[in-house]
Amino acid sequence: MAFDILCDFDGTISRSDVTDHLLETLARPGWEALEDAWTRGEIGSAECMARQVEFIDASPAELDAALDQVEIDPGFPAFLHAAQGLGARVTVVSDGIDYAIRRVLARHGVRGLALRANRLVVTGARSYRLEHPHAASGCPAGTCKCAVAGALPAAPSLLIGDGRSDFCGSGAVDLVLAKGALAAHCAEIGRRHVAFGEFCELTAELPAIVALLAAEAPRRTVAA
Ligand SMILES: [Mg+2]
Ligand SMILES: [Zn+2]
Image (cartoon, rainbow, N blue to C red; front, top):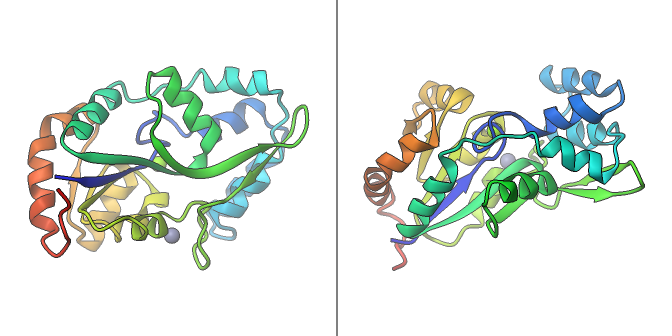
């Protein structure tokens, strides 16, 4: 069965939030106030991150060195392989930074995945800018996951995630695999979901999840 998996990156594939790690490691003071404004709901994540990235003061080599400290859930590559073997088209959909995601995944042997994320642009020897090629009007996120989900071809779809950036997309797919704040959000609003902690659990449950997905998405055309 062909189906789509939209998978969050920060806190879902990666152990920690990569953008936070880059800011804590490489940014000049001042970015924390923007984080506070975002936490209070005064600015959206797109504006927050774009302004924070301008505080990074690092050469590309220093950026790479910081990225090479990032660890991922060790069960993700095996999950990816198993899911693709069952017909999944996997897209990483992230409100994080495209370059960072590609570098971290490649260091863990994962290459060639489709990716929808904010775009890092080098603007000088030690400076960067963030662009939002997957933003949507009316959505404060840099990458609007509900817009990405809505643009999928007609096939059953899964979203895997852990946090606030996944809330909008979780309403636009057939089934949600959730941990952290996303699992709490799904429970609170009564959205059907499978709670998990580590990718190795999902790999073990994958045949059952695919069967559940097929039953959850009867209104959709299932492409062979
Ligand atoms: Mg996340
Ligand atoms: Zn959205």
